[in-house]
Amino acid sequence: MCHACVIENVRSSMLSRRALFTGAAATGAAAIALGALSARPALAQATGRVIDLTHAWDGDFPTFDGLPGITYEPDKTIEADGYQLWKLTLFEHSGTHIDAPMHFSADGISVDEIPVEQLICPLCVIDISAKAAEDANATLDPEDIEAFIAANGDIPAGALVAMHSGWAAKVADTTYRTNEAGDFAFPGFSKAATDMLAGMEVAGIGVDTLSLDPGNSPDFGVHNSWLPGGRYGIENLAGLDQVPATGATVFVGAPKHKRGTGGPGRIIAVA
Image 1 (cartoon, one colour):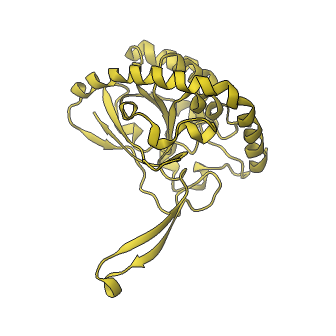
Image 2 (cartoon, helix red, strand yellow; image 1 turned 120 degrees about the horizontal axis):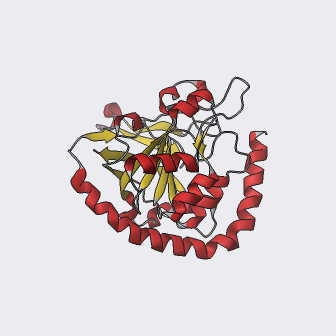
């Protein structure tokens, strides 16, 4: 399916879901805010090792639409003004960034309205890199969550659940975004998996790829269900191979501009 067709399908789906999720967003956000209080004990588990889960970002960083996510214009220079200052033009959804509920819901909360209690979370990393090596559009599925729980124990309410597909290693290559035919091709969550995580009162999900949905998604099913429920996502994570499956705490440095549908962030884990 062409990229423009995908976006048009999503636009019509968002409008039909607006009324459905208006109440759900408020209920979901309240439940997560309560669950997020359980994030605090995770701080005591850390040994003090700090891992940056954020890619360095410039106009060459891959974006969904293929356009530069950020451009620089000199505003002040040492030679002329005695100090330096860039004028930046950026798209909210570029680099390692947050998807706020408002991104896929006209009535969803904006990025500045995400409760701060939801931005310090126990981090759970589910590794699907073996599947992703075989299938560029592999998905994190309910059985992956079940296997994670069997090996590591329950996923706590208020957690950030991150998908580690190994895709971050491809970020400098065109295959991070598309396959040889020019079609989107990258791993993501399945809607069945995120529905399962929503029932566990997870605060947010994260991926080391361009999108919460896999590249071959025709309708952004995860975006359309997860975000309007009052939850957030993080895309283009780095360094997930350096953190344990459980036991780390993640600090989500979300931007705080009003009416924001999301924005570039600094994501840091302490393990």
